[in-house]
Length: 322
Image: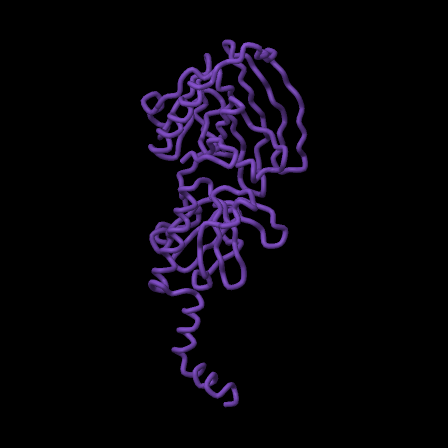
């Protein structure tokens, strides 16, 4: 779902058909900025990209005439809507029906209150410039501004390949919550509760990387991508003390941030939306309750195991003398 970030902008992930009539939808992070009078999209949430990374594309709100449901126009594209900007139509896919309705409503509301400025400069017909960002895995090659029926359309061309933070940024649309390819049907039905991409803070460097998370009955694991077989780390639920919305999100300047507190470390994890954040907290909390029973913390579980072990009891009662 679209959400309001700290700068009072409407944000969220959508899939866009960047090349007109290609039928190929790419995953992008959108920012609707009414103060700047623009709709911009990026390879990922700019919070997770190197500082100064430019957008992939943008549309001035003054040139948007209408935003509407396009499911009948594109029956094969689920939850599709269209942005009419002059002679160009941008087709986008939302995550679900409610997401579609909210984005259409927000975009139409933003364009209604936008009035073209009398002294607004018109961009030249075409302009190209080289932009080298060789320090990152994704290279921005060039941007181009074209006048289509009097409407400036700005697009950025990028090389394909592995994107920021080692995650696959090809952007091809995948069903939400899709499991890694190597899991057989029998394994899928066995214990997987929730899956999806989130951004986590590193333990040492404190940098933020997008990882694929998988929650099952016993653990929360994360992988480099959803194509990996071996997890980078497995967090056992029996070691989790609590999971909650992060109280330090203001200090970290991160939206949709929650924390997973274990016996040895606190994991800071950022979701793509408030709904996803609450969904993860609820799913992890539910898995912990199902495993331990209501009101059982990791400390109480360890104490219960200690008290239920006769050997440990005897050792404790005689202070190790026996």
